[in-house]
Length: 122
Image (cartoon, rainbow, N blue to C red; front, side, top):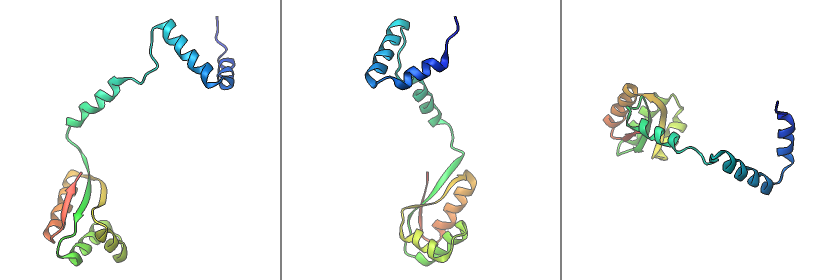
């Protein structure tokens, strides 16, 4: 007995929401299954949280007292123009770089903190 897949799909397209709901319930009862999303996948993702991160987002939390020096450092790190760098620093807290390797992120953090900024690695 071969299934006519296209005919089934066409019937499902024409079905109302109530009819589809009844179909799901009937399938669950007949085959003793559930249509709920698997919880194991969410648990597995949570287990990976303990693993060490390999990429970080560098966030400028506060610009500090030496805003001009921070703007220059942000400009050097990001390659942005002066106005864009100033806007970024003025809008703190803002993410400066995303997906940066651990060593590079720590280097950026050290450079910004050296000029008086507060930086968070996420």
